[in-house]
Amino acid sequence: MADFVMPTLGADMTEGTLVQWKKHEGDRITKGEIIAEVDTEKAAIDVECHTTGLIERLLTKPGDKVPVGTVMAVIREEGRPATGPIPQQTVTPPAAPPVSDRVDLVSLAPSQASRLRISPAARKLAAERGIDPAGLQGTGPDGAITLDDITQAPVAAGTAPLTAADRQARMRQTIAAAMARSKREIPHYYLSTTIDMGRALTWLKQANEERPVTERLLYGVLLIKAVALALRQVPELNALWKDGEAVKCERIHIGTAISLRQGGLVAPALHDADRLTLHELMQNFQDLVKRARAGSLRSSEMSDPTITVTSLGENGVETVFGVIYPPQVALVGFGKVVERPWVVNGQVVPRPVVMASLSADHRVTDGHRGGLLLAEIDRLLQEPQSL
Image (cartoon, one colour):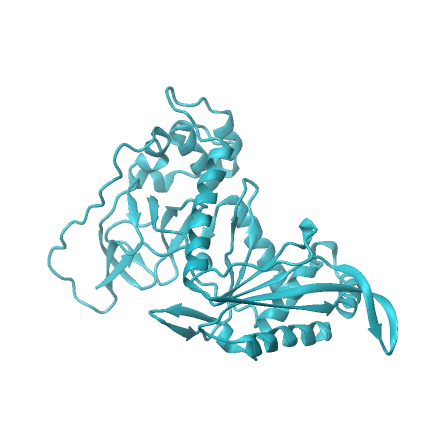
């Protein structure tokens, strides 16, 4: 038997709300298949199963607020016999929740919810407004219920929907808790270096001239790929802090900080970023941003990052020293590209440069190894054709 537990979908998560089961008792499920949808303070997440077998028992029901690590379902792995009766596990709901938390799509029976075609973003908005989407006529493809359908539907009597300010305040609280934990538990050290981006930007312009408009590369993809490749040379920074020690990760999953339209941010993973071509990385990045802002990320994208890359250049910031996302042990930041005097072949000339910074865990590495990572990022960006 294998237990399916409420996963940790970010350092700031202590519990999640089960929105709906995607499978039923007795169904066969394969590793990597979506088994449930869970709502966190930041987004609705599709949660993948990590084993293959038959679903023996579902122990929680839609609407339950489930602490991280709680067993939600029991799966009989393939090739193993069934066991005796499994005791029913219940999750005690919080006392006197707000009306906006009680009235939700999750009140639907699993079979009814599974037939309802509605996006996670629309479902979340329906919950906040106290609207039962089962009673709506969807205007999307194949009758799917859209955000516009929810927006135009009448709000349930006596229900006070959460405002954008309320939602942002909740997210800020969860982010604050995670960052406070990071500064409390992780002895940060900080390094920075200035990188000449002249060659990289020239190469990028030429490469994009040869590509269709829809396939052109963004400047930020070069930065992500450079960080991913540099980690091969300094692998101890591609690690997670677990049970009092650093555990090196064999694969490089770059957590990419994405700002959300309603405020706050998430940092889902670009899996195997060092192995992807720039074209593949660009496609995956665009897809990730789109789904992050639509509230349709997968659980592995939230739990798998091994290091985070953040850039505040679009906001006019020249330097950023980030706070590490536990259990990661490092974060790389980039500011905006600015033109500065630069010495080239003994002459001072104007060059586009960017400030790259590293926030790292002093329990795992020291400034020497951190400096090597930044130097390798710099070297790779001087050879953009090799990325």
